[in-house]
Length: 292
Image (cartoon, rainbow, N blue to C red; front, side, top):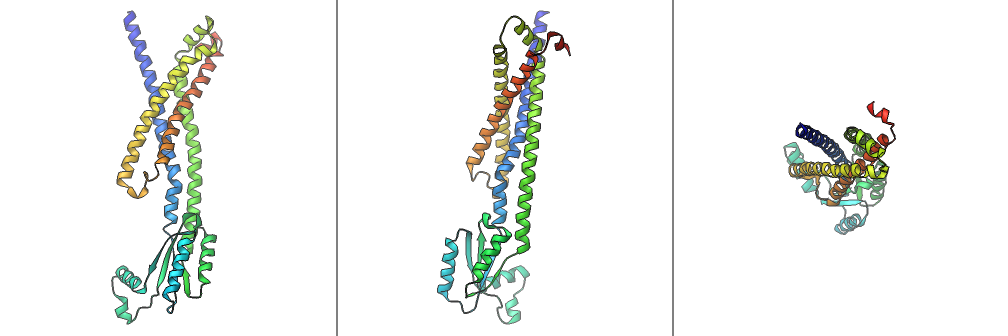
C-alpha cells in the first residue's frame, strides 16, 4: 500500500515538474521568436530603405573627368551606400528588356541620358534628408536632373516607424503575459506542497531555509525549459536561414548570442522571482488558510 502511494506521489511530482518545464519552454520559445523579430526589425527595415535609388542624370556635354569627380565625391559621402554609373546605352538596353521591344530603333535615336544611380545608407532615407541630398547634387553645373520616388521614400519611412512601434508594444504585452503564465505554473507547483512548507515552518525552520530548495529546484526547471526553448529557436533560425537567405539571420551572430543568453537568463530570473513570492505567500498564511 505504501509503495503504491509513493509511486503515486512520484508520478504526481514528475507530472508537476513536467508541467512547469513545458510551460517555461513554450513561453520562452514564443518570447524568443518575438525577440528575434525585434532584434532584426531594424536590419530588415534598413534593407528596405537601402533599395531606394536616387538617379542623377547628366547633361550631354558632361566631361569624363566631371563624372569621375562626382563618383569620388559620392563614394566619400557618408550618405552613400553605393553608386553605379549607367550609360545611356545601358539604360536603353535595360528599358528595352522591360518593355519587350527596341524603342531606339523605333524612335531613331536614344532619348535617355547618362546617369549615376545612388543607393543611400538607411539612416539618410527620410523625406527631408533625401530632398536635401537631391538639392545638393542638383547644384552641380553638369547635372541635368535628380530623380527619385518621393512617395515611396515617405511611405517606407512612415511604415518602418509604425511597424517598429507596434512590435515594441506587442513585445511588452507578450513579455507581461509570459511572466504571468510561468508564475502561474510555478505557483500551482508550490501550492501542492503548501502543507510541507507550513510543517517545516512549525518545527522551527527559517523562511530562508524553507525557500532555498524550492528556489533551486525551480531554477533548474527554468534552465531545462530555457534550454528546450533555445533548441527550438535554433531550429527555427536554421530553417529560416536555409530557405530565406536574403534575411541574413546569421550575418550578425552577436544578435543571436544576445538573444540566446537573454532567453536563458530570463528563464532563470522569472523562475527565481516567481518561486520566491509563491513560497513567501504560503509562508505568510495561517494554518487554517491553507485549505482555501
